[in-house]
Image 1 (tube, rainbow, N blue to C red):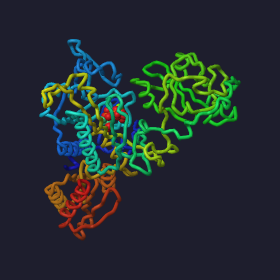
Image 2 (image 1 turned 120 degrees about the vertical axis):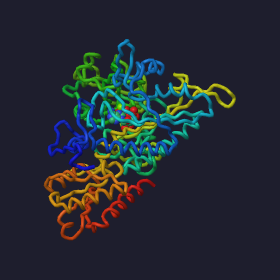
Image 3 (image 1 turned 30 degrees about the vertical axis):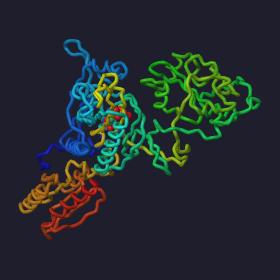
Image 4 (image 1 turned 135 degrees about the vertical axis):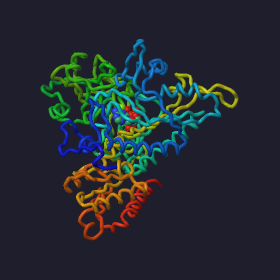
Amino acid sequence: MRYSQMLIRTAKEVPAEAEVISHQLLLRAGCIRKLTSGLYTYLPLGLAALKKMEAIVREEMNRAGAQELLMPMVQPADLWEESGRWTQYGPELLRFQDRHNRDYCLGPTHEEVITDIARRELHSYRQLPVNLYQIQTKFRDEIRPRFGLMRGREFLMKDAYSFDVSDEAASQSYQTMHNAYTRIFQRCGLEFRAVEADSGSIGGSFSHEFMVLAETGEDTLVTCRECEYAANVEKAKVVLPDTASKTVPATELNDCTKVETPGTKTVDRVAEFLQVTAKDVIKTMIYLADDEPVAVLVRGDREVQSVKLKKLLDANEVELAENDTAWKLTKLPVGYIGPVNIPIKMVADQEVMTMINAVAGANEKGHHLTGVNPGRDFSPAAVGDLRQITEMDCCPVCKGSLELTEGIEVGHIFKLGTKYSEAMHAVYQDQEGKEQTMVMGCYGIGISRVVAAAIEQNHDENGIIFPLPLAPFQVIILNLGIKNDETCAATEKLYQDLRGAGLDVLLDDRDERPGSKFKDADLIGIPYRITVGKTWEKEGKVEVRTRRDGSTSLLAYEQAASTIATMVQDELAALNQ
Ligand code: ATP
Ligand code: MG
């Protein structure tokens, strides 16, 4: 491609609306443009990166034996009613009616449609296993679309679905996808981890997320320093120390006593006032679980993990209530709420049940209770692992020490079991001619999110540093002698030779100052830059510069094309082992 003919408009200024670096750089490099909240146009440069990712995904899915198909984006409500998700899915599902008042939605995911295909097309054990995938636009009416391509409302996803004869066979299909995903992200040249994950609204028994490591990631993952354990904090199991289970003689339990604690609305204030530590205080928070208020108890120095809470309550949505809402719904004095005689549903983190002679709100303004003992003084409706794991906790597998890292979820694989096949009657005949339910798995990759994640992980103050496999162009040639016919001819030949060797090349043939050519090449992040200028005129040499580390070397013009082609091919081959 010739730069002069390509729609690339770069910008120096950091766009005000863009908070994270990938969003800023994608806009500045002219890769995307915003249409409206959560909706973006992929301009040619951005689309080229997206296509690179698509190609890697397609190759590896095909290699793993999956078959590509393409399902409609618009889906009829009846299918979602069959699976039970029409009412369950919540406001992320964009619902609408056609001219005949029939209900539809825009596909946020395609379990229903694919299960419908499976029940129509697959009838015998001989046809299984099958893995079907598509690369297609999804729509989710995200509550907070943000960070550009990282959390759009419309985005590009690869979604795959496997159908098997048994749970055991489904585990094998799952493992095949786990391996394929590992290859995919390795081939992208990204630093990533696969972690145990919560299976969320998709459902199913267990799942893994693939996380690109980046400080700006919205997810936190916990990894063990001693063993292989890695999990999303939403899922990471907190194990109580052995000492927590010992029983305390009743004589050591104090009476529950109301004390005046004016102006102590926070855990720290009340702890200070009563000369105890946050560890001695029971923190009572009001959450809304599907709009119903629920009191959630954790130790004063702990944080509630809302995904764990959602699971324990079996709710579709949970959200911490604003102070006003909490007051309106419960008439309880925020800051002084506690578990004893609380008039609303209450659940507790397991650790709270091991506390002795604790301090808790008295449900009366300016008052707390001391000598609060779980079991004796209050009994939650449910107790479970509800809090966020920390680096102070130990590994649930080997008790080793833990490390917390930020990551961006780029892929998610689920073992679904028979959730959808049972609800929608996707069955096959086994060897004995008996009807059996198919066992399913589903597997997603956020293609557009990967491009953003790659930039979050790979950039510097001058712009994007595309990993070679995802770069819209592998090489950019800068013609710095645009007025010199010989230089133009030389760059033209180099351009054709590199293209002939199968490389994706951008030729900067614009009549611009060298300074702005260098700046743009850096900003758009092309991995290899070849400069044809004064050194070529004087010595017949071109300069090759690597975007990632800025290292440069001079190559004789005649050898340049073949040397660079080899460099590019070697780098790709190393990732494609
Ligand atoms: P998240 O927790 O980030 O909302 P999710 O668990 O809802 O993700 P899945 O349903 O597993 O996501 O979808 C599969 C993949 O699609 C995700 O791993 C992610 O890469 C991508 N994805 C999901 N939501 C978005 C979005 N709003 N914008 C861009 N990509 C997305
Ligand atoms: Mg989501």
